[in-house]
Image 1: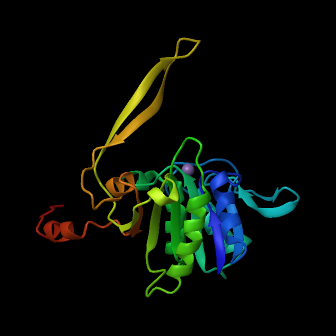
Image 2: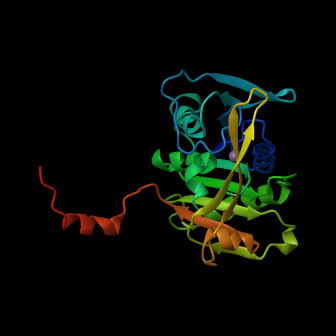
Length: 251
Ligand code: MN
């Protein structure tokens, strides 16, 4: 396949390089990724500043294109300008840290894959459930296996797939679960600090999920399953349309 590879951790992130190395023997890989980390920018795009593109080497060899924009910018720019429309898949990751539950809404990794689907390509986001000393080896290997299987599946490419992989030794992983995205709220905390000039500032820290349902991405990942959640970007609350039709709005 001709794969557009991107992420939100930046073009030199270990997770992206691991995916590149695992896939480059079997696929043609085109890397277009943010020049610096843009985690948690969601589906943001850059409108008020110009987008600049730099060719980037890894060691002595050309590796890809670094963009001073968001993950969604990278996908748009890659397909419209840098690489062209002749690609078979938009692959985003491997992200450092899980993208499950409502964090999917904040995720730049997932938004890059969604952008691919909006533009008419299959989109897959891959994340590893680890922040400290992540080992991307198995996650990259699993992704290469996943792609080999997916291309044979009916209707592959109709959905954006959000894949999350536990940070466990391969023999401790319980299997693959197809689950829905949890919508349970997060328990969040802000740490209030004071800088040397006496100004108050805040760090967002220690978020926890309140989800209990085992058929959700949050719980299944936590239990040691690889989770795959199909996503769609139509945000319409379908059931509400009928209710709204019963409303009377005077003007
Ligand atoms: Mn990230």
